[in-house]
Amino acid sequence: MKINTPTKFLSLAMIAGTLSMASVADAANRRGFQSTISAPNTAIKINVTISDELAYRADHVSPHLRDRRGSRGLSNGFTNRGMYGEKELDRLAERLEQKMYRYMEKYGVESSDDATTVLNLVITDVDNNRPTFKQLSSSPSLSYQSFGNGGAEFDGTLTQGSEELGTVSYSWFDNDIRHAAHGHTWSDANRAIDRFARKTAKELASN
Image 1: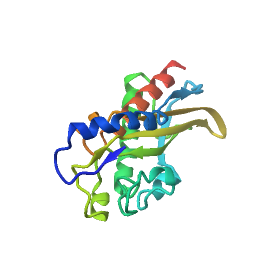
Image 2 (image 1 turned 90 degrees about the vertical axis):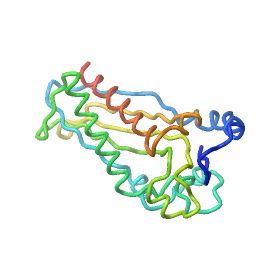
Image 3 (image 1 turned 30 degrees about the vertical axis):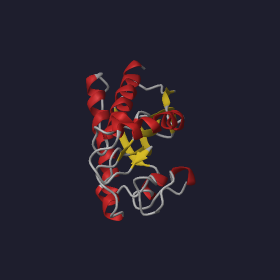
């Protein structure tokens, strides 16, 4: 759910009136942590990429009609789930890699850039809480005071050479618009990244 506003304040009545619809629509966007990983007792390298569709959305609005959200103009990437900017997505990928290594160290999972066991993680979907610079520049009527629910979705595969050792996935998108009003651009996506990295590292440590 996205709310565009040229002013700093949004009426509580307007927010309350949209909560029930948002909860129903966004409930389907939650997918709990799932893992079939069976990690060997070796060092692990982390490799993070962006899905092809998400890479496309760095410079375009989403190709799916379900993501249009009633926006009047296709130049509005904030409501049409796209035009994030390549640098924004690169920073999210970098954050996920850093969080993974940090939690792996915390839970005693050995890592190495030369490891033959590789955890390939893909950021498959994201949603921002406030407009990015590219979204603002592409839609002059859009304000940074606009806000909406955010989150992220991930898939991963652990491999050793040509052998697959399991998969991991996680999706979390907030469904309470009242939280979004107090966040920054990627508050919910960063929260999803942190949770996914922590859960995945714990899973690696337990095998």
